[in-house]
Image (cartoon, rainbow, N blue to C red):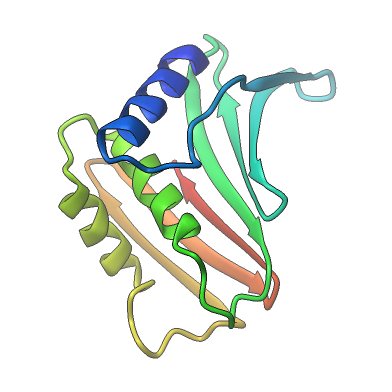
Length: 144
């Protein structure tokens, strides 16, 4: 899908599930002259942003959420909500329960998650979903 289709689909899911605070307005598309690639970025907050990579046909090839903050502290749910929304955006036939199943398969809902060094992944329908805590203050969730 194009960046505009991606944004519209993402916002449609935000509206459907009433996920206030996650709606996207304008995707900032950037071109890298070094490797002739294009990316887009959307900043949700100081602690959460999304970056996507476009293929040569300008279609979304992969998307990552990047977050910062103390991973040992409870979240306000925005991160897990953003992850679920991103999962639903990439899979038209998934329900919110399917997104929760993927989050569970990754291991994010386990009680014994090592919050300073965690990596979990799962593959569904040819897409890889991966969550990584890189240090106690930085984490990424990606779909490729």
